[in-house]
View 1 (cartoon, rainbow, N blue to C red):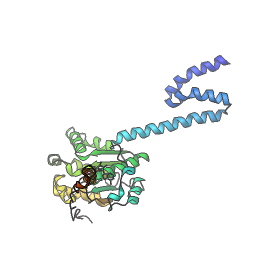
View 2: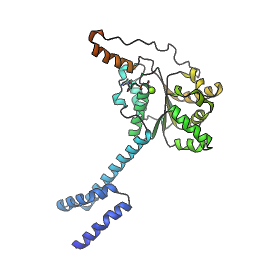
View 3: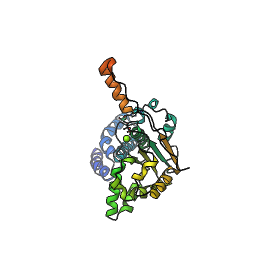
View 4: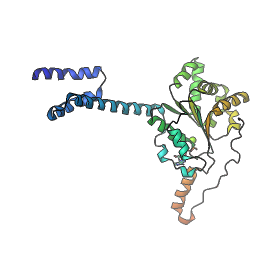
Length: 279
Ligand code: ADP
Ligand code: MG
């Protein structure tokens, strides 16, 4: 009897490897020992093993999705100080972070404002929350993605490259306004936007309002067509506040200089940042 059990046990690691059950493979011996010692019913033993395997599988899947997302680490919504941006409602952002249907409907999210106001942090924070909920997110500098798509177009595999991006529920394009003039000579960014329109969500951060997007697309007509698709179903966050970065630096400066600390230079936000050219 004993030799039979030992023979069974010897086969287990091989079978568990074959079945790709690494957690059970690691844990079964200890759990079997405990189960034998405490006289567990077989159902409990089996249930415990499977629960461990499922939990670790979920952890691995999440870690993979987080790595795939290329989201900047540490930029979560927990770290975001909503008091610093009065124009952005925390409850609204939390609803977006819970994927309250906008992701399923392929709606977009646009964050505008001068440098340092937290656009990237906010979009990344929403991205992290979506990954937590099991969604697939890709965060990228817009100019990097444009470069990648241009290379694909040169090799006549743009459709395949766009299809690859389709597996992401949310594409977060950081710093759209930094797409270089020479990159705008092809229309890959427009094709990406058109491809995802009403199907898959895009989030964009940009310093420059729509009116300056002519720099980003080959011509005015294409700029209008891109803006039109982006804003058709979109949440627009206008973050025209003082730079959080500069404020933080000024705080540190004050702390170091005591009373002599210089005041943060006030920078007037654009008084009319986003001409609403699309109804
Ligand atoms: P932007 O993308 O608008 O230029 P960032 O998101 O890069 O600004 O923010 C600049 C820095 O300030 C980052 O380190 C970011 O984490 C921090 N920051 C900006 N706004 C906030 C905020 N409201 N709460 C916490 N940190 C913030
Ligand atoms: Mg940024």
